[in-house]
Image (tube, rainbow, N blue to C red; front, side, top):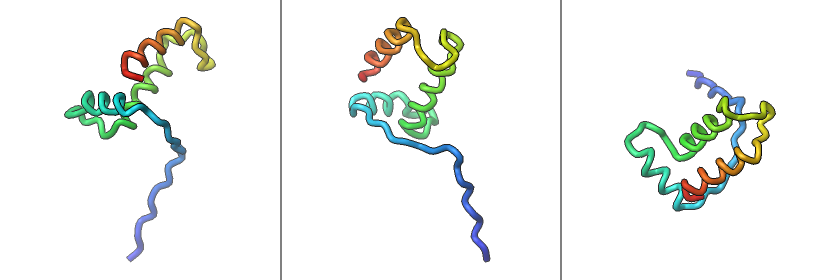
Length: 79
């Protein structure tokens, strides 16, 4: 009997490092939500931030104000 070939993902993945206190905070936040992992949550949040219609530049470059806002949000998350 032939084994089914595994579908190859066209998306390549990399690795980022996060401080353990931030990872632990995310783990507490996603507990019981159905979110499968910290990586899935971080990907979800970053997609939301980066696809926000509030972004002033369509090339993915943040304004100084957006950079400061993002910095404050990341600090609030413990990063």
